[in-house]
Length: 328
Image 1 (cartoon, rainbow, N blue to C red):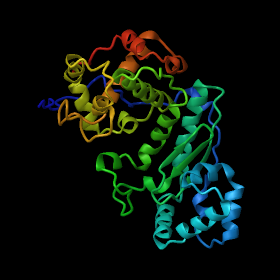
Image 2 (image 1 turned 45 degrees about the vertical axis):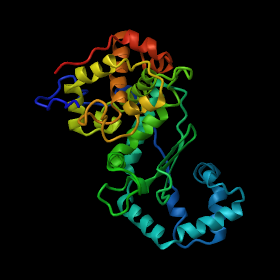
Image 3 (image 1 turned 180 degrees about the vertical axis):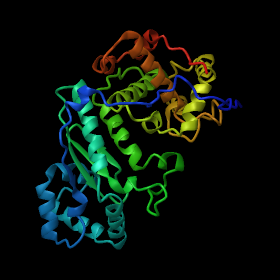
Image 4 (image 1 turned 90 degrees about the horizontal axis):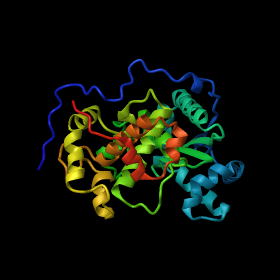
C-alpha cells in the first residue's frame, strides 16, 4: 500500500485565482437573467384548480420536472402533487429553503457571468430557461439545452438538519451553494464535449472529464479548482505534490487503454479515495489527471475553447499534449 507524501510546500503550478478578473469579453455579453421561483407556486394555499393552472402555465418546467413520475394524465398528476406538497414535512422543508434562499441574487449574478462566458466562446448559444424548485430531495439538478431546474433543497448548508438521504459525505459535501454554478457549467459542457463513442478506454474517460473541467475553468476563471472538481484544498495540493507517483501508477500498470468498466471505475468513479493507488489519493483521481492532460494539450497547441471541445480523439489529445507530471 502506497502512502502519499505529506504536503510540505504550496505547489507552484496549481491554478491560482489570485488577482483574477472576469475577461472583458465576458462582461460585454452579460445580460439580465430571470430565474423563475417555481417552489412558490407549489406550496401554500393550493387548490386543485390552482395546481392544474400552474402545470398548464409552465409546460416546459412541468415536462422537465414531472415527466419521470410516469403519470401521463395531468389531472392525476395534480392530485399526486397536491398530496406531496401539502405534507407537513415538505411544507417545513419549503419554509427552510425560503429562509436560506429568499435572496438568490448571488446565484443569479454567477449564472449571468457563466452564460456570458459561454456566449463569448459560442455566440449562437441560447441561454436556457432557469427555474428553482423544492423537490423533497427527489431531483438536484436538471440541465438540458432548453431548461435548468435547480432543486434548492439539495443545496442547503451542509450542517442543515435537512439533508439528502443515502449520500456519503464525500459526495454530500459538494451539495452547497458554492458548488452550484460550477456544477451547472460542468453539466452544460456535455453539450459541446465531443467524444468517440467507440473508444471505451480509461484514457478516453479521463480526457472527457478533463475537457469538462477545462470548459468550466475557462467559463468561470475566478472559480477555484476545489469547487470545479469537488476536492478539498489539501486533496488538490497533495495530488500535485504526488503527481509523478500517481502518473507512474497508470503507466506501470498499463492502464490508459484499459476497457474493463470495473477497472475504469476505480480511477474515475465516485469514491472517498482511490485505494488502488493509495488511501491518501482522492477519489476520481483519473479525472484530475485527465484535466491536467487537457490543459497541457490546449496550452501547447494554442487552441480556443471551441476547437478543444470539438476534438474527439482522446489518443491524439494525449499524444499532442506533451503532458508530464509537475514536480514540487
